[in-house]
Length: 247
Ligand code: BLA
View 1 (cartoon, protein in one colour):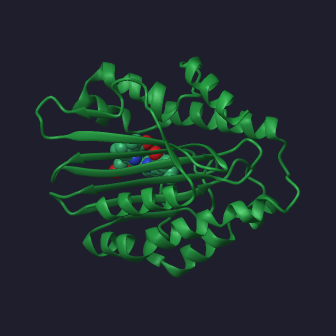
View 2: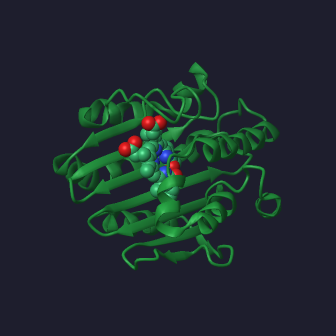
């Protein structure tokens, strides 16, 4: 379902000078025990970003996932890119969340970085659902204009043909906004806020149960701590690697 979006994402990453980074042993790919699911991940170092990760889960008609998070350099206070797309083929159900995840909840910061997202949300009312978040707090690392959709085939087609490309383009221009204007947030604080994002997300991520059911507890724990949210505090070596890279 999301193959063309994965392709688009990787093409954009490469066009910006992104270089692949090796994943920790055993985490780049894992096959489910019943052989009907496979999860593949990629890690990129892109100029302006200290870490950009991408994951695809292919469990056939049961579930297709595309998930990606881009962490800007600590010297760039712009929001984190957050993408979480799920397609349940058997029931034709889409869950799509796309956001410029703000480091702080501040009006001036929103005005500087979220205008593009706000106009997308006005343009695509299907992705304008007021979601009752069960796992996450909508006021922590989510923007007031996050694109959220629970829908079906029509919304999935709209996502693929229009929403995703427009969203990605709109995020990629943020770097240009951030560079010429004076920063509101000091790099040491950006770093702390990005670390807290990982800690918060590792605690709340509703995907852990899903990973465990497909790939077992041991692999899923490692995947969460070492790849999805390495700064969550339980995998110090990965944080050090990130810090060294951005130094
Ligand atoms: C919801 N995300 C979900 C759900 C699952 C995943 C299973 C619950 C589905 C449902 O509510 O019906 C799946 N999450 C994943 C997977 C990965 C993951 C497979 O991290 C990793 C590969 N989630 C993110 C990011 C954002 C995000 C970056 O990973 C931000 C854009 C948001 N996911 C998000 C939100 C919900 C969700 C807001 C609804 C959860 C809620 O109700 O609080």
